[in-house]
Image (cartoon, rainbow, N blue to C red; front, top):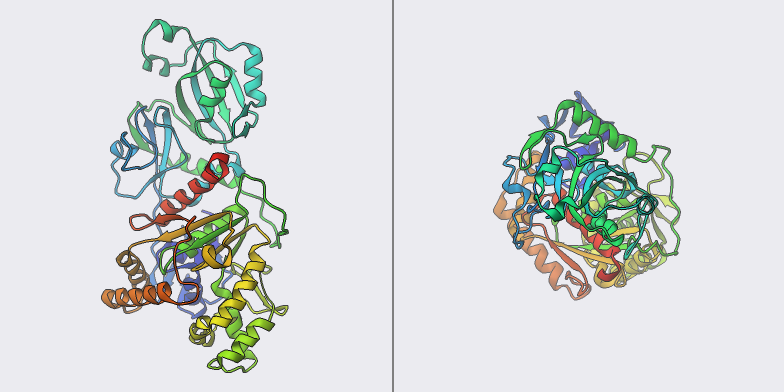
Length: 504
């Protein structure tokens, strides 16, 4: 497996958010191959590295990869409200798997199931252009001119399609030809083999229908290096080691070329309409907003802006300049004077962002224990919050940003392109925090964590200035019964929905 930053591996193992895992590393509680690691930039291969926290081994998630031949009449996603069953009726596995990409209810063929979210993203995101191959049975017999139109791209209601490989087959493909109904109308059909490098909703059916040859059957027979060969409809199997290796190699080939850390240009120009330029994610403690925000920003190559760093930054400045933390007026005046900047990482040391105060890089300094102890009262000062809101808005309005906090959609960026409110039941959020603390080797009591969570919720929801609440136009995502990968799949779906003009 490719090397990853240590804090990402710890977070995926359930030891807390990436920010919490950074603090575990800096505190000297992590060893790799017996050596204490305190630097945030360390990268290791989670498949082979011996990682321990407080002497306890960190057990990484075991990934599983399953190929299912999905029959027509089954959904590729889980929707309890749907009238059709999902693929989960066909595959019984102890792991929490999800489908890689969509396959319509009335389409058939290869459906990849896994719990490897990183690999799934690499295989399905349009940026990586991995091929998906289909056999399409269409009404009638398309002439060469129409085949060329499909090859070069056609104009759909959501824009032109990318060039595709399209072959008119001389005879019906075996064994799939035997699966359709035997009728006179079925005999007046032809078969196409189509390879796409994009994946819009019902794209193939819309493409052939536009040319007057509606699809009778759509069967996916290839996904990247995988091929659906002799697997009967409705059956499934685990991928072979060679197939898994080929998938990972394909994912690496599709990844952007590694290079030196750079500061991407961020301008006030709007992004193309296919992607929201400003994304606001709000929610209570332990709802997963920081983890989802960081993952989404990484996928989009956007700035990840957890607004909490601003309060840590002004707290550090106050301590460094010996401004009494208890002096609300003095701290507020300081917050109104100091210019803070949050940038993409300028140093490859494991940081998610670079934080500057009047031009000085204080990214590492704001994680000091003394800042942690003092930030709570500073963030409660109304004047400080007002000053930070102005600075946060200035940074957010530059675009290409995922902003995470408790009042982004309501106060900081009320005009954000896409607003998401991540929520979960208070007991589930307390359970998450409790499990994180146990995984870090800390003593914890679930009822105490629950009581503290309720207390924090009450304070956040009832404060006079910028209380925690979902913006009226925010999309609420309840993650109570979902893991991070499942939430990320839902959020990607929201991005796709936003890109559809009718959805905005």
